[in-house]
Length: 199
Figure 1: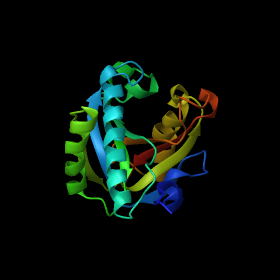
Figure 2: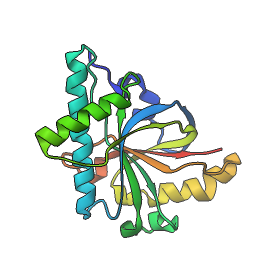
Figure 3: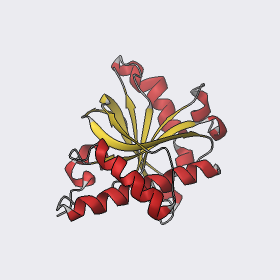
Figure 4: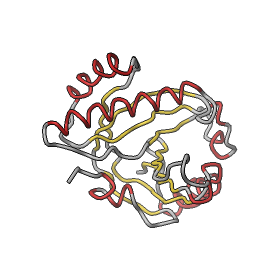
């Protein structure tokens, strides 16, 4: 059976809570690529996501040949802006992002570098995808069901109520995991894990 993040790390990839709750997130490994701008319209965003998946499936195929198969996880993203209000008012042009795809613990930087040559040769993609470790630790996390553009109220609750109630502050970047596929799911039924490192 291929390794599956959604089964092994259910509390991170398949939470049930629709209001904020605290979780401990272990160190994880990722493919990562950076950019800025509106994810709905910026061509650079589409190219970045395409590059991530090209790397992920190249690494998966090489791992499968060694008998270490895994399911490519859902797309994830770290998001920030110079002014936090850019998220509550959805001013997407000023958003900055690092898009991510999780890697199993046995995949290291050398696998990413090996994939780089294959992706360049076979897919004609030359993108600054990198290997990154991320240890978020204690986080506030919630499952948001609905359109991405309807995240404003639940994010406002986090920043205006939940953190103060818990005596906590933000310690890292806003993290989203796109459990639903927007190409196949109507916006009202999309599932997105929203996460904020806190301390």
